[in-house]
Structures are given as structure tokens and as C-alpha cells.
Length: 515
Image (cartoon, rainbow, N blue to C red):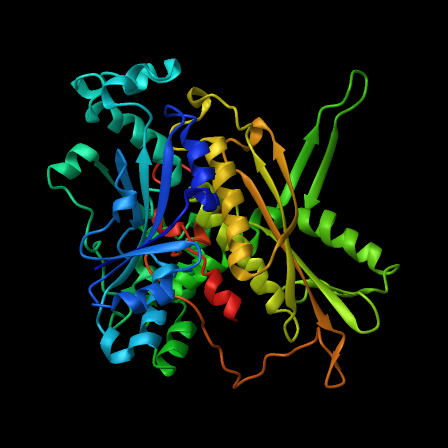
């Protein structure tokens, strides 16, 4: 069953207008585009229930049943449907499933598939035979591709696929392209997309690192994307080889070998994302002097301690409003006698380089959580960002193989931050762009948020807390899929065409808003 929601009047859908403007950079204009939000399920949900759950009846219309597309959407040349790959977290589907469970009951939905997709119905100007000459700049793209007759569906396919490339990420999504001719010949969109069952393994894997040679350790780090150096792997080997450690593990009921869980914990804790090894490293810096001036040399013991923490500590003596810094998830300073303000910013560079939209969204909702997790918990009020890319007009030929085009990065990252904030109910109040060729290899994506807390709760400072034995940890959100695994360790590696899909993270701002 396909449940499709679309706007009754195209001009009411700001999304379609924005996407159409992007497509017209590569396709003839004026084109027409309708966006349809799709829920796919093997649950026979009554039409009236689907309409109540998934449409705004004032401005939207619903098509439900095994065959999609109402007659008013029938004038199109291409259908393009984008959905998540198997195992990747689909946060909209999680919300749709919960809505169906509330409406129909747990038993009716148990074991049923619920997926989502976004469908684009594209209408190109003119008849197929005219399109290759409609827009001179696109004649080479739309004419004669793949040996087809000029103006035929084969010509359009190459151009349409290229135009839609920035709108989906093959690392985590799939895209289906159906032409009008293929539809008339009987082709249809999928009834359901492939899925996987996420079952917990019964036992963790045991890995005898203590007996491995250097080459084996390096191979283990590479194959598992631990991103640990040989020196770090050797330290792990030495630890698990100590007789005292083996005896203590045996007494605790643990095997002598390292488990895969333990290796993953060590790898993420020692990653660049968590440990900031470069920031904390000892750096020998040399600067050539001007003619007649001797060169300057300096040893920096931790960029972080020398230039960030020390500066803050120097200012702290003259800033009595600074209440907490470097101790919790966010900094805290006094707003007035009754309220305090929390501020947090961090980078999300590598995830955003792999999946601009998902990586940036995860960055912004992550700092939202840092505000919620400071002290007894602040209320997030606004988001901010600073985004650094290579110039958007950089010619495609100058973009190294395996890297995304700067304009695609910019648009995806910006949209991810805005959507993450809007879906969480937290507006983006300020932001900035920086363009420079040095950001071609990796963008810098700074995500920030601010929030407020009462200064005192039950007579105690709100920014102070202690985690004690016996406290409960509660995880909220989608169950982890193939996405997000090694997102932290990947921060220690360079970007290339072999960068893993699993390092891409999918944020869940809808659940976060409810939190």
C-alpha cells in the first residue's frame, strides 16, 4: 500500500519551488515539479485513517492504495523516488509507524513494514522531440546520449539523473527513475523497498590482540575502521598481554581476549572526535623570518591548552558571570539573578563531507542535546552556525575525485542545519559562510546552540550535577542501523572515495523535540 501526500496547489509547496530552481541549472526551463511524500506499508490502513494521520486537509491531498498518483498528478515526464537503503535509520518511518500504532493498535501493526520515500514528479517543457534544442547550453546533455534517437527518453535519462544527483546520497539512499514511456509500458514504483532485520548477536566476538604481530594489528585497525595507529594498537596489545590484567579479567568473568565491543570502545575514546589528539599534541613550529631576521621556532604543548583554555582562564578572573566552563556538556554564564545561559558549539566536518544533509543535521541536534544535558537540563532557544567551504562556483574539473562539489556541500549542509532546527522546534538565529580553496578537501561545519535554565532549582545551582552509582541511563530515539557506526573513529581519517557509508549519521529531531 502506498500512501501519498501532496499539495493541492503546487505554489503552496515551497520545497518544490526550491528544488525546481536547482534542477533548472542543469535542465531546460521552465520545468514543473511536484513533490509527493510517500509512506509504504504492507498494513491495510483505511484511507480515512491515512488521511487523518498524514495530511493537512486544508492544503494537501491524499492518494492511497496499491497504485499511486492521482489523475491531477498525471502530467509528468519523469518520476524520481528516493528512499533509504536497507538498514539505514528512517526517522520519518519510525514516526509514521508510531502514528499507525496509536490509530490502529499495537497488534494490527506488529510485524508490519512501514517505510517512507520522497517522490518527485517532473515535467519538462516542450515535447520529447523538441527538448534537445530547447536550451542551447543543455543541447549536449539532452541530445543523443547513449545512442538513443535525439529527444527520446534515453536522452533525457542521463540529464535527469545528473540533475537529481545532488538531491540524494548513494551512501545511504537509493533512487528509482521511471520515464513516461516506461510507465506506459507497465513499469511501476516499488511496493516496498528492501529491508533488514536487526537482531542482536548472541555473543561478542573475541579477538586475541595479545598474540598479534605489528602487521596483524595494523590490518585489524584498517579492516574494522578503528583508525588507531600502530603505537596505539601496540598499547592495547600490551595491556591484554599483562598477567595481572588476565587474572583480573578472569576474576570478573571476562575472557582473556579483547572483545569486539571493548575494541570499539577504545577506538571511539581515542578518536580525533573524542580525544582531540591533534589539538592536544606537542607541535614543533618553525616560521621563516624576513631578510636579516632569524627564523622563529616554538614548541606548542597542546594547541587547546595554550590558545583556548589558557585564554579562557585568563579572562575568567574578570568575568564573574562565567559560572561553568570545561566541566559539562556546555558552558554556563549568568544572564540575570533568575536565569543562566548555556552555550555550546562543535564541529561536524567529516560526517558532513560524506552526507552533507544528514551530517549537518546530526551536528545541530547533537549540540541541542548538549544544552539539554548541561546541569539539570537547559531549554534550547536558538541555533547558530559557521560553515566553511571551497567557493561554490568552483569548476567541476577542479574538484578531486571522490569529493562532493562545493555547491552541493553548501546546499546540503545548510538545509540539514535548518531542517534539524525546525523539526526540533529550535530556530536558526544566526549564521555565517566562509569560502576558501583550502576547504576543498574537507569543509568545516561549526554547529552551535544556546539555551536557558533557572539559576536555582530547589535551592541548588542548576548548572551543578553529579552522576552517582545506581543512576539509570535511558536511550531515546531510533534503534541504531548501519548508519552512525564509526562516525567518531572516522574523524581520524582522510576523506577519499572509499569512505564508509556507516560513518554517516542520521539525526532524529522529531524524537528530540518530544524530549
